[in-house]
Image (cartoon, rainbow, N blue to C red; front, side, top):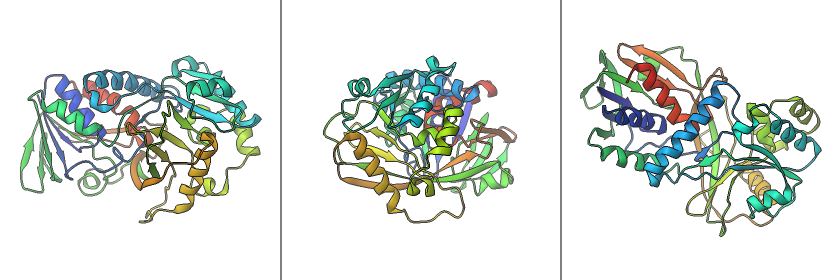
Length: 373
């Protein structure tokens, strides 16, 4: 079988991985010289902890298994089974963490409510003030800026993979066939459009009423911390954002403890993970209303720095990168991904939202199974 994958981000690359792993030939086409979207502009977190139950959790847990397996084959991914800690500072936040740890699926997620002292044993860099923490053993991390590069190196080594950058696919010209902006036609037994947040052009022509929206976020990265941050870190605002934490305790938190004004205005939570070079990736904000601003706002960065410093009990290293990113999210946020046949032999796979990096291996596996690869 010959598979054409359109899109060089992590979802597209994992579809290429699944096809090659099953013995097929793959041509992957990317409109930029390299992928530049949400696949790079993210935390690199394999984030099981906050996922909704049912299909979403099952997908995330399967993806976590696949990331670990692929990471063993491709060491350059920088897969690290580091887990995560969410420190809590008062009784309301503690109650939400306690309710999460009592969920029926808490063991599958690796949840455990730990004391502040136990949290510092797990992550000694947490020298600030907090009362306890929710530990999630199943969370992990990879290096988002380089993951696709290393995956492609491994794919090329099989002799069944070709990467064509700098080509925008413009038209479906037949069963399993597309034409790019160089005028070249690429024919396969199946075409997968994994174009991420690029929802205009060909995608709009094929699906005018696509039930997917774009979301913009801001993030930053620091110079090396100078010591290991042995886990990912979230704050209690992440309880408000992720569906796994829905409970009466969360209702009480929302009713009795307002977010800081900056956090509320920018729909914020803290997520933080250490890169292999020692720097910290920190975010994030959420903007849903189009058109998005072209600039970034400074107040959220200052707020995040303050929250991080309060957990670390020390000044944050110099911030040397700031960026905004855009990802595609199903308008029905309970859906893991939008997967649709849009023409003969052509399927569109998009809209995983903030789950994209986490769930991409399992999303691609499901596509491969459904298409009979």
